[in-house]
Each structure stands twice: as C-alpha cells, then as structure tokens.
Length: 486
Image 1 (cartoon, rainbow, N blue to C red):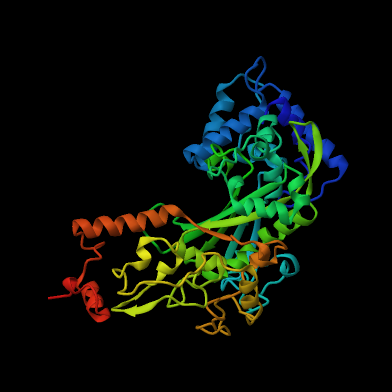
Image 2: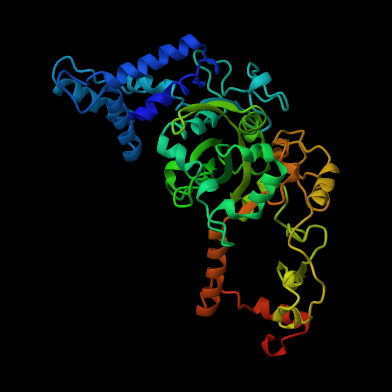
C-alpha cells in the first residue's frame, strides 16, 4: 500500500463510502483525504526513524492483530507500551480507535444493516428508519423501552464490493495480472482457468461490449456456513459470502489474499431460502457495476477507466445448491439435470437414481449392462438444460413469501416441477441467459464418494453401503440373484 503505484491509486479510493459518510465524496474531500494519506506516509514514526512512517506502522500493526487474533484490549496495551518505550515526540497511536481512524478513508470498513429477526426483510433503503418489520411487523430492536442505545435483533455485515475491486488496480503488478487471461492464457483444449470454459467464451459472444474491455471483472460467488466459536457446538453459526475475481492467473485466483469477503449473515440456524433477503445489497451493487460501471485508476497504464463487473457463477456444496438455485434437492425430483423427466425410484428406506445410463455416450459399454437396474438403456438424454425451458418454469412460479413470520405457512407451495422460489440472482440482467449458473464444489463430491467406497470395501459400519437393505432392494427389483439376502 506504500509503493508509488499505490499512492497514485489512493485518490481513487478515498471517495468510497465509509460508515457515516456519503458514498460520493466531493472533490474537496478527495483532495483533503489524499493529502492526509500522503502526509501520514511521509511522517517519521519518531524523530530520526527512517524505516517506518506513521502509515506503514499502522498498517503493519493492524495486520499483526488480524493474523494473531489479538483482542482490542491487548493491542491497546501494546500501543501504550510502545508509546512509552519509543523516544519522546513519537506518533504511535495510543488506541486501536486512533489507528483505525487513520485508515478509515481507504474504504476498508463495512456497513451494518439491521435485519428482521424472522428473516423477512432488511431495514435498508426505504425501510431504513422503520422500527417494525414491513412484512411481519416484528420489532426491530430487542428492548424498545430501554434507555440509551437500541440493540437490533440481527445485524448483517456488508462489505462494499466496489472499493475492493478498485483496489485490485492500485498496484501496477496486480493491474497487469488482471489482464493475464486475455494476453497469456493458453487455449489448447485443456481447462486450466475459467477463461478456457465454454461459458466464458459464450458470454463474450453474447455481450461483446463487456468483452472489449479486458479490465472488466468476472466474479465467482462462494457461500457456506461456519461456527464462529471454533467448537462443535451447533447452537449458533454464521453464513459468509465470498467473491472471487477470475481475471487473475490460475496460480493466484484461488489464493486467500484475493478472496473478497462480501457478506456475514448472522443466524442461529441456516438461512436456507431466506438467503435471498440478505443478498439484496450485493445484488443491487452488482447491477450498478454492470449497468453503469465505476471510475477506477489503473496503476499499470496510468489512466482512469470505467470498470464493470459480472457475476459469472456460484460455487457451493449440494445442500447449498438448493438455497442459491431455488431447486429443491430433496425428494423424487431432486435431480436438477433430469428436471421434469424423473429418473428416480422408491427403494427400501431411500430414493434411488438408477436410470442415469441415459446420459452416457451411445457407444459406452455400460449402456448395455444390466447390472445397474436389470435393464439396458437405449434412450439418449443431454446433460445440458435449455435456458428457455427453465425460464418458462420460473415464469409460472407464484409469489413466495420468505421468512418465518406467523402469516407464512409452514409448508410452502412448490412450483413445478421442483422450484421453491425465483432466485434473487435473476434480478441481474444477464443471469437468465447463462447456461451454467451454479457449480458443485468437487471436494464434497470426492469426499462423499471416497468415504462410501472405502467404507464398503473395508466394512466400516457408518459408511458401508453393502447392507441388508441393499440386498433386499436387489431382490425386489429381481436382478443380481446371487446377491439376494439369504
């Protein structure tokens, strides 16, 4: 952050929204903030110190706090000790509050958005000043009669995406890396990077104006839940949403420094379909980045340009696929690829999907094998679902009320063939035209298949699939007679 290229880019970031300040700063505010950063970068930490400026010291001490999980009280004690140890006239901040105040204009902070305790709505935009939920009329605060500061039931932490995308172009080397996919990516039929995918190439054909600017950013969205207390107690968990910029080279794109935390969703339990309520601010910003773009300084080319961004796809495990795509992953029609042509049967204590040989190539030897369900498969089916077919099904969906308020039925109506809602991602202008919208994290697939395979081979009780119920299923289906239960 202290290189010359970074200092050139600071003036493009100091106008970003910070808590309690307007999103679009005036030119006078930009000049004032930039002068303050430049002054802090040139001021010695103490008289005669040539290695550390005030800005460099604050950045490194806060970085240590994050890496080592230091509490605010411990850091305050360390700062007080350094203030006393270093020579008189030193400019070490005495409190963490003062240290953070120096960096607040970099756009590193986040917004607190109150949410209804029933997950019905956010107290945001037109609902910002309400004291009751506009849907279920539940109180916004825990104790409305208490004196002093009001405490909301739930608070969504929203980290603005725009300043974090602009920061990628503050370093000349990083700005150069953001163009890697178009100048150095090899297209030899092997998929090493999302730029080699058919979805990437088709998107370029659909939106050529977006593809003409190589600095426009393509984003992935990953989500899952975690226990913030680091133990096995499941009484409380949080849901995070992470944004991944795909312009970077393949050896950098999935590294931790380039993961952009976007949302922290609080809830004792999983948000499930109600995740759409919390995705509203992010989707709203993505729409703005697609339609209008944001003025950004490029440290590599030393010029300003209008940066645009698109959400390319989502990544999650299979249960989260239900929440993000709105296709229910339970019951007979849970296979998204089969859609309204079901390939599932009722087996003993479970549902079996045993007719998927139809998706294999016509010359595949398993097509003529009778070892799977006693039948050979001659029908040919395609793995790719038509975009128009999905859109027609969603157009017939009735309005689904999200949330746990009393007026909401416990069992929501399910749209045909198995939709639970229309995902909020369809508010993005380009989303309905995408063939590949959601990706299943291969780690979970490999883990589950490997555990079942080794559990069956080694006879591990918890993971063994060679059970009496499996033998009874073979007997009921009247094939593989040598494996029937005796």
